[in-house]
Amino acid sequence: MNEPHLIRYRFDLPDGSIKTLEFAFDPVDFRMLKAPPANPPFWAELGFSQCANCPLDAAVHPHCPAALQMTWAVEPLKALVSFDAVGVTVTQAERTMYAQTTAQQAMSSVLGLIMATAGCPWTDHLRPMARFHLPFASEAETLYRSICMFLLAREIVGAGGPNGFAALEELYESLHVVNRDMSRRLGAAARTDPARNAMALLDSYTTLLPAALECSLDELRPLFDAWQSKRNPAI
Image (cartoon, rainbow, N blue to C red; front, side, top):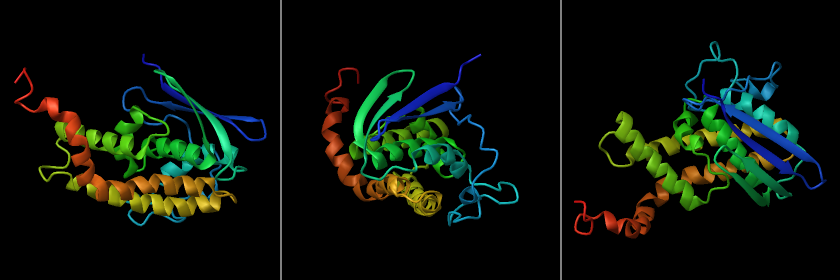
């Protein structure tokens, strides 16, 4: 039997304390395995600041699946301020990474991982990226990974059809709505602002990709010159 895939975030906080968040994922489909809290907070109810494009029915899903899982992350870190300096150690099966960063940047990485694996119908499209989680990825890295994910989805399941990257752009427009409305939820979850600012950082990628897709492809094109048939000895 395959063991769950584990990712652990350890936060070294400004007051000298340590907070640890551990996430377990199904080894096959990489959905989050953590059980929801027994008494979810009010801001996790589906109808509270429900995303404008949410397809879920409150009669079937009384709580937002992503918000339910965020409660585990927001509560231990609610005393932080966005630009507090924190040390973050991320442990995965393949590697351990360490970064000195801001509270909002660290939470952005955590919330992005949660949203992609918690069961939101929109952010579930990003689950392949979560499987190969890259903490603190730059804009260029995120763009590259998003494009690769989309092309692989098109190859494996025929996603997107023949219309170039139109389907990817449409997905990111929908994710922008989700991030915007999730930020409102998180504003009610804590008095301090790291969680909301973390969502703003995530949202910056949803607005970046459609606008920068064409020029970014031009910048990446020189990296692929060996794949041109005239230079590839295998073709």
